[in-house]
Image 1 (cartoon, rainbow, N blue to C red):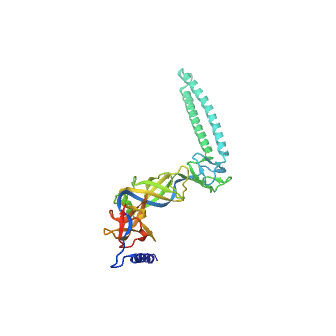
Image 2 (cartoon, rainbow, N blue to C red):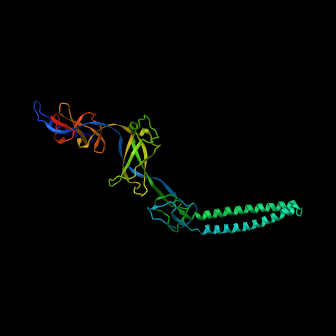
Image 3 (tube, rainbow, N blue to C red):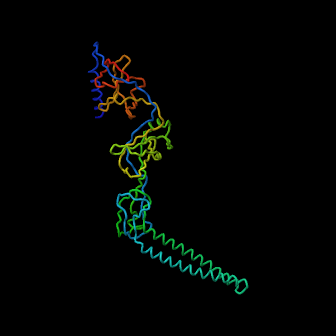
Length: 370
């Protein structure tokens, strides 16, 4: 179907050109037009992409201990800040353990004081042989054991306090928090059906995958094989948002995806955009433009010189004998008011910039070059 459509378009174009061509042996008048000389400019390869925006990573929120969920302190789908309290578990068991650990530590410290005093009294008595060496060794051992008991009780208290702190869950990163299936009253944590409470999506910086055909990549990078070290290959990375306006933050190259094979014919370059105000949303599609590689000479013409009809782009060449010649071209990206022509023109040729709709193949023209 597509081949038949293309054939009809080409046939229609040929018929139009034949119908307006000068008759054999006839003499046509001279048509005044403006023209310009085709030039080559040193420009980087500029390319546009349409790709979805994605987040850098997700933080999965999982309780470290099991317990009853008492409250959630966030709104689903809204931003949260790093360190913000988001969940609270019932802390009664952990609080009881902490109080018991504090009591044990107090008891251990009291025994340590008594053991140290006994040891300090025994030292001068042993020097005058008032007590045996065996008794001194016993007081020394009791003092060391009391010191160790205090350290053990202190560690038990630290563990109890740590367990108690696990009943309050804070956001580990800033981002957009998703909803939670667990509600107040549910038993959550390891070994329950609610081992994961929610996720937080980091969007302080967002990422976009740019799939570049290998042919264009090799041309722009001036390499013969794929490389994953593409720092400096991209420049002037810009993002266009949904309303057509340009996002104020310029993008930057992040890395090249390692799992993309050159056999697929594409290489994926990942770029990032700072998103401090969360204006960019993950999942939405954006248009990305970027300059690729070092500047190289490219053919550029004024946009007004290119006529586009039914996906066919063409220009009118003004030949050396001052006659017009129709020619199809392949345009690329635009640069200001100029259009990059990928094929169909060579530097130095003269093309018409006015009167394009009135020109016919072979028509005699009087061109004013501007």
